[in-house]
Amino acid sequence: MEFRELTTDVLIIGGGTAGCYAAITLGQEKDVKVLIIEKANIKRSGCLAAGVNAINAYITEGHVPQDYVDYAKKDADGIVREDLLLSMSERLNEVTAHMERLGLVILKDKDGKYVARGNRNIKINGENIKPILADAVKNLENTTVINHVNITDYIVEDGVIKGAYGFDVNDRTAYKINAKAVICATGGAAGLYRPNNPGFSRHKMWYPPFNTGAGYAMGIKAGAEMTTFEMRFIALRCKDTIAPTGTIAQGVHAKQLNSDGEIYEDKYGLTTSQRLYGTVTENKEGRGPCYLKTDEISDEQQSDLYKAYLNMAPSQTLKWIESGRGPKNENVEIEGTEPYIVGGHTASGYWIDNDRKTTIAGLYAAGDVAGGCPQKYVTGALVEGEIAAQSAAQYVNELADSDKNIKIGNNSAVKVIDGSDAAIDEKKAEYERYFSNPKGFIDTEQLEETMQKIMDQYAGGISTNYEYNESRLEIAERKIDDIEKLSVNLHAEDMDDLLRIYELKERLVVCKVLIEHLKARKETRWHSFAENLDYPDKSDDYLKYVNSRYEDGKIKIIYRDLVTGGKVYEHSDK
Image 1 (cartoon, rainbow, N blue to C red):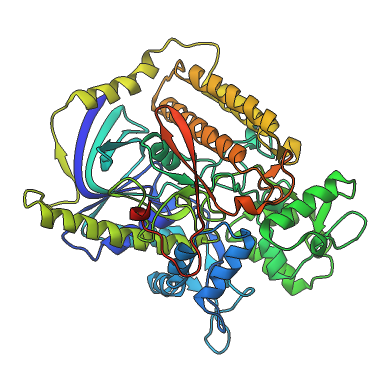
Image 2: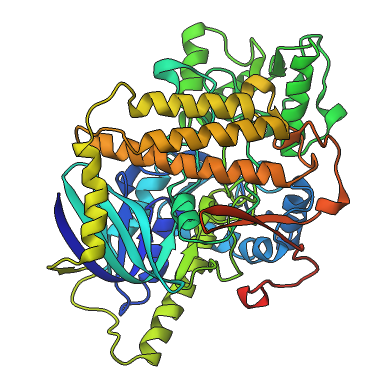
């Protein structure tokens, strides 16, 4: 493999929602040079690749940021970081206004006010939201974007981030990127469990299949503290298409209905996990399939739903049109997806302080990869990108002030360096080994499917109605270890094969941490999200965070007290 060594001030790993907005924020720091590394292409990468039809985190008229904190805390049954939620909520409207100035179309009524969809949402035409962000980044003078490079490892020395290693997904080129600060914005983890649809349709899932938990895995291997992986997210979706149900539930106020014609949602509760749990239970007890009741909506409402889904999940609109049976004629069948680890909906991710600093000095986390701050959605990811960027800029400038030998900025955002060293040679050898491995009987896809089957059957997937117990988790742990050992011998024909191998390796690391977290929370606080058959009830003993850190080859569980009542957590409090 060829080799390139790059140097910048701030490295942003992941050019999705949070990563792009972090760069836009850093664009105001003309002397700070920024490099975005993106596995795909920032124009259509990340969760917003296909668009979105609403801003789901917004402080609507008559509400204040604390209202949003209270909502998210209730939905997560108390296991949140109130300080993170408040600092996010206070900026939601500000970043929304900025997105409108950049070109996002936000729907308005005859009085010029945003059109609300519920208490916390506003309607947008958001098919092009990601290109809008990408164009704004392209115009930044101090920022360079390198697409199609996959980052695999942080470079950490004495607990301080120094950069990262990676490789081009098309050309046989390895990278060492030196940076004074790093912002991780790689998103959450999909593909850990067997998905709803088999075979060639297996990537028709709720969360982007290319989000493999890379940022989590890099942080775990580097010894960063993680939090609340056991609060998995399982989406309630339209059957087969896996399209969002909130658009229907909130847009036309559709209720959840079982096959006996009963509205069942009030029986179980209305939090996100309870809506899913109710559907799972109705099916288990023989009253399925379950639906969203839409057969009484108007022609105008049906037309609005067609348009709304074209903005983000066109397969649902196409299904209605091709069948000749729209939501006005037929209730919409719903089902749960496989579990995901995603900090934008639940509290899973890096353990951070209020500046979005991780426990590794100089490393920041934003968006779905950052823990403790659920229900952040698009605007929350933008806010965290902004906060992380401001903190990283301050850190870089303080470094320069304390050491006059450190230069901030140069003629371009990236300085190319010739040369090599032992660490670089070792990383190159690791990548190249997969090309020299003999081609065996087991390939990456087979191991990935085996991993998903194990997680599904033993760690609470769809086939077990999301239920698990300690005995099953121990089997899962043992079998995931076996797959990890087999993955070392995989063969790569080209760079795309190498990418798939590393995506599998990332998922396996996340699986191992997830299993330990599921074992550590000995209660059932969130039905379906974490349905522990050994401990079916909620316990006040576990009104705390379950955190973890990888130490000496083992995952160490750390229990931390809740941050509530206006307190702000800082890592110095450890």
